[in-house]
Image (tube, rainbow, N blue to C red; front, side, top):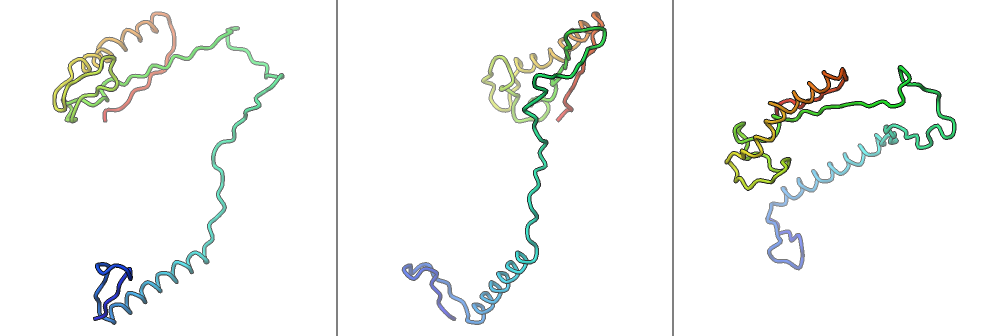
Length: 152
């Protein structure tokens, strides 16, 4: 056996191994280093391409395109309704705790205990709120886009 110190000033930083083992470890390290160097020399990295879309910060300047909205409208409004109720963390769904971050009134409910205030706020949206908004749009003949999250 050969005694090898990894740090000459430290007596506890030593490794005891047979000379054959040390030769095998040194040969493996040399082979891996040679392999890594050959690989690096063989395949140079391709130049990086900028795949981000180009930004146009100039715009149309003093010559905007001629455009008119249908029926002579002067303004276009897009209503996008975001429905998120039902995707928040809830103890009843097996989560550790109900959400407290997305509520108007923060809760002190400990993990594993239902937060009835948070639940009622989220349930209002799906039980009453979204239907009121949709009725208001329908009664005025207004189109709208709605998006919703899938259950997580």
